[in-house]
Image 1 (cartoon, rainbow, N blue to C red):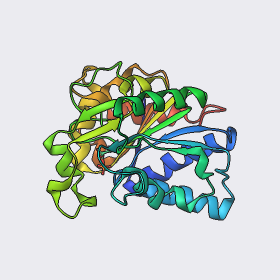
Image 2 (image 1 turned 30 degrees about the horizontal axis):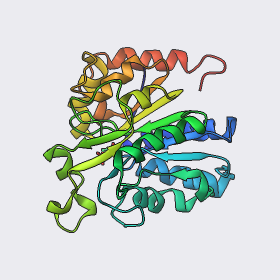
Image 3 (image 1 turned 60 degrees about the vertical axis):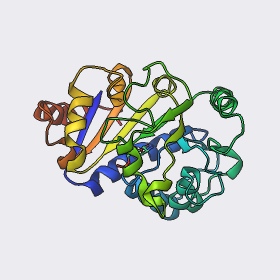
Image 4 (image 1 turned 180 degrees about the horizontal axis):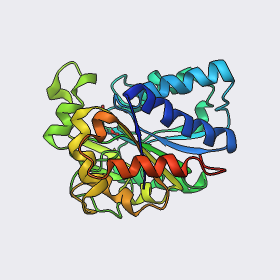
Length: 261
Ligand code: GLP
């Protein structure tokens, strides 16, 4: 795990955006999985800026959404797919037919999940999964107790996660308690993972996910098993890390090596 600590949320977002942009430049046919939530919004804004001002080309990039609410149709403005389009995809030159999301309104939800896994495989597998983290340590919607080998499937959201996601809904009671999410195993199969977390509300769970034991109770901790996982934090989210000074030293020394990105 490579832990990168930036002074503030804006610089953390820019750092994460630089990592994504570099991968897009190096392999324009990149297969990306992308999150929703508030944390990645400044990262998306920076990627949009890079496309407009520096011609960062997304035309051959394939995008998979990480998760979706059950019972919400893809074209519903409350869907996570619509949210990703609004905040990012609609503003860059992605090809709509290369962007996929789970359909939470599918009649056969298990079939929908299996087909999504097959589409990821058909795309050549995920090159880069960008992740946020919930306060209970979930990645995607892989709530505590999710198997670390899980694939795309139906999950029940905790009451806490439903509350945290109430923003997109007129009435918090409307937040679906069921969701579809790519699995922890699906994420671990990606060639690279990048988790972005900012703000003091994430400090305690980041410490447990990064420095605690690998556990299905904190699915972000599974990233410790991944050979190429990067965690980009601001100072507030890094505040509880016990080895923060070591991570800073490591980053200063290793990022100066030739070819380091
Ligand atoms: C939701 C999403 C996650 C996201 C998390 C954190 O549960 N399914 O992908 O990482 O929220 O959201 P935020 O970044 O708003 O804290």
